[in-house]
Image 1: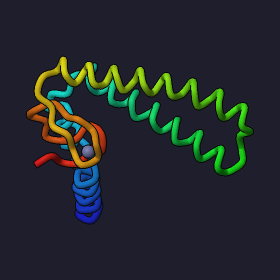
Image 2: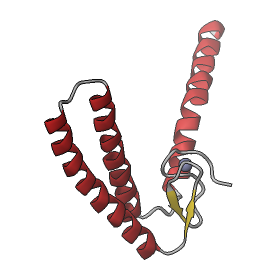
Image 3: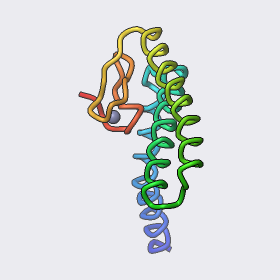
Image 4: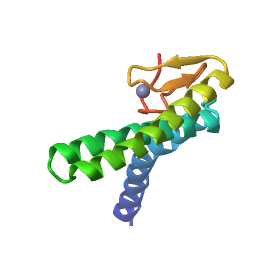
Length: 121
Ligand SMILES: [Zn+2]
């Protein structure tokens, strides 16, 4: 009976050890003052630029012919331009921002980078 109690106690401690960083990180992120507009516009900008880069890779790999490449690139350039403009507009509307080494602009007072998740000093 003592052995069973010890095993259950160790299992509870191990589960707490595993779960604690997840809960603590969640609290840390909830405490950040990242406005949804800034966060969403930065994500949209990143997705648009990634899609543009993917088209370049696909063309280099021979997956796209020239006509498809030109069509997709012109469409994605417009989307990226709109996304970058919207991100800059959201940044300027949110007030103070600080750029992280990953390129993501975080609102002032942020403890973690909303782009890469690293702790901001
Ligand atoms: Zn970052």
